[in-house]
Image (cartoon, rainbow, N blue to C red; front, top):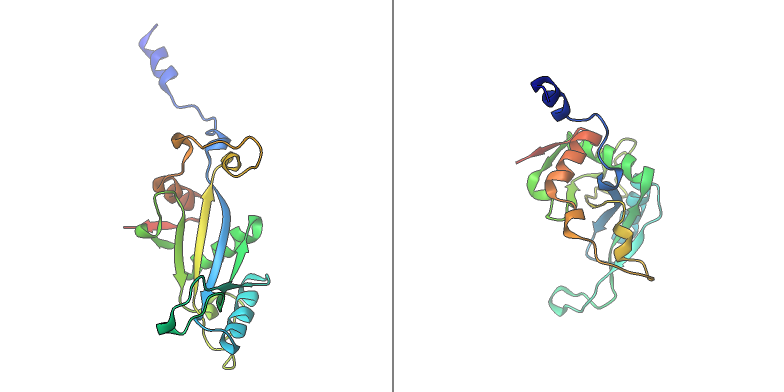
Length: 185
């Protein structure tokens, strides 16, 4: 084989990578914790519904802590789970608030990441209402690949091989490509 042919054969192909290996957003969980039931929780629910466009569910305490005045199954906050196109649109809006930057420590070893938004009025279309106040929220994003369903299905359940796990670097590359987000060290 001539040296020119060897160089041509070493060129990277322009064929996209395996679609099974591409990371994707499984779900986004948006959470507001208020620490008490009552009027404040109702206001947080209206804020969350206004920001996400979906009806929130209440989060309940798992145990009793007498020093904090918390009983088991007492409502302490509210959350919404977003999937598919609604999740991508919400995430792009949330990244605009964060100026398309994410701290590297926000990404865990499994490729999931989370960050906070300090003020709900920073979202487009939201205005300050003195009757409601200002609420911050936590945004947790769960990443998967195609094929992760085999670990959760009822029939013929299997383990996922370690080579199919998502790493933090893959998530950072996914965010840079899809949302133009810069991961800051």
